[in-house]
Image (cartoon, rainbow, N blue to C red):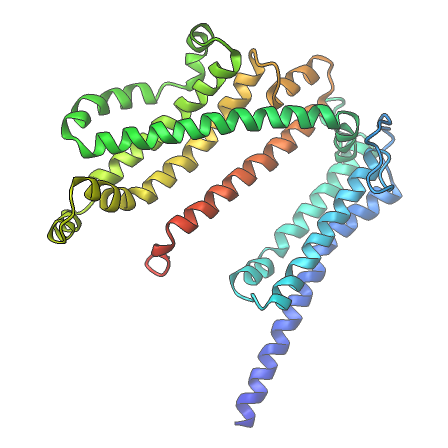
Length: 345
């Protein structure tokens, strides 16, 4: 008994040492980047605006960049502490321990980028600005970036909602009715492979506003993969499930919405995830061609003045937005498919 207790205590001690090492090394890369940002600040100065003070600490691109590094360090420091205090020591803490080498690499990459781009200006100017100069764009154009970000979100939300509705509806009709599959599915395959941007001239002339035209292009991006995969999911529903439901007295509507559609849900979410990537690319391209706002419009207007650090700032916002959209989609999918837990790896 004492041997078992001793081995258990040893395993707990080793686990705590591993957690401390992961925690320290997680902060190492960002700490090096922060030290370089403080010791060797960028010579580029950001214009002062009413938004240039964040909690009284940030007054330039250098300050904002250093502040962002501190925020990252605080967030990564609190993550394992919150997991331990709340008792959630499962997969979340294991992922945190497994990913610390990647976080070290991210911090060191930011440090190298800062040294090459802002400190020594080795990277070609003005095409490859450093992180401190990019951070300065958020101080100079904070209100304008926020306005364009909200415009892009509104446009994407409209196209996404309408595209998912029509995609799922079309997929259910094609997958359930044999005649609809015979006539509509070949048309879907032919038109679906055409890039949405190719329809832009027709959209601009057919819709009353540029916003409606861009929303139509996003709907097309969402519609094809969702409809295609939904139809495949409905048609692949095993006959045994239908027979079991009929035995329990299910009608046609119940067979569709309680048997076929739940079976097709994994296909539907795969289609949504695939469509989002195409839709986001189409969103940016459509904003570059005739939209009065949006992140694509902001990139175009910055490129005209060779303000490439603002272009990179817009790219950073796009990366954060698309990551959040994917994360929300994954959460919804995990909740909708919670019945699959334990059935698949």
